[in-house]
Amino acid sequence: MSRSADARAHVDAELGAVVLREVTKRYGEQAAVDALSLDIRPGEFLSLLGPSGCGKTTTLRMIAGFEHPDEGDILISGRSVLGTPPYRRDVNTVFQAYALFPHMTVAENVAYGLQQKRVPKFELRERVAAALDMVQMRGFADRKPTQLSGGQQQRVALARALVNRPAVLLLDEPLGALDRQLREEMQLELKLLQSQLGITFVFVTHDQDEALSMSDRIAVMRDGRIEQLADADTIYARPASAYVAAFVGQQNFFDGVVSPDGAGVDSARAQLRPASPVTGFAAGDAARAAVRPEFVELSLDRPSGNVNIASGEVIGVSHLGEMLQFLVQLDEQTAVLSRRPTPDAPRLSVGDRVWASWRPDAVQVFAAGDAAARSGYVPPPTAAAASSPHPSLHPDT
Image (tube, rainbow, N blue to C red):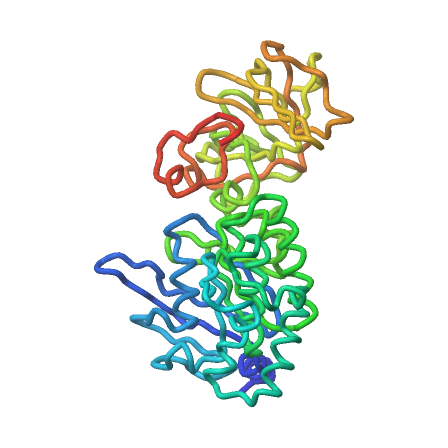
């Protein structure tokens, strides 16, 4: 065995390492997970991100043991867990539905798993108190779940999972039922807790903001496969495909053809020129250029030059607090979204004729037809939008 292969095997066998090898799960003729391979490093926070139906929850349930793969292998801490029931795997799961016993107190809920393992009472009390301290809930130990807020119930569910000291904690959209402010608070708490404990977290979400804010790495899933696996900065700034670019963040897409000199993409509404000539395409090939809304500047006066500009009419203005959002109609089929910091944003009104412009380093080029079905502003796909041939152009969708 080579030195690099030996080192890889050592990492795969470390406590908390999770390895999926060519895992497939079918329901009838439909492959929910399709020959998926993934190495989750010990102690990392990894998010499985994607729309409904992409296979992320099925993948998590196979790691937990609630579903069984039709093909492939799953290893946890270096050992295959095929055929191993959930209660014998060194993992715990936190669900979106907290599944707390309503007739038990907070402390009794957290202690339940330890009681089933017949942990001595003195050790049980110490571990329950320590777990509640982790989530700042010791003062609520004698309350019933119905006496707690949603965020407090989520903390109890976390404590109940962590009290067993698993090597891997699986989280299936655990923040989905919380309001926005509480969800953002819990994102910070979860990441801080994971950093302190050093436990491997595998987090399933359809919410790009959750994944970007907490993850060491993100696996963007599509049709049962991983479209891109990388850290948050790479996923956002250098997406591997138009699908990833559209799902993570918001995008303006321009369909066109590669220019004769290979310098960029010529569309019906604009000539888009990235900082470097496009590669992997021949002149005249169909291509799709993308520009994120935060890079689109608006002005009443025409900018200099003939590339990376387009004209249109403001059809929507939204105040987002720290940002102002503008929707600009370029033609009947194409609208462009712009987001500018509120202090620096132009003061424009619906009906104004404006020029949109962007820097060359804001332009990315992808294969044609790889994301949404039309040009212009494309909202992140959902289960409904992903199957629709005409995504909405409304800025709030």
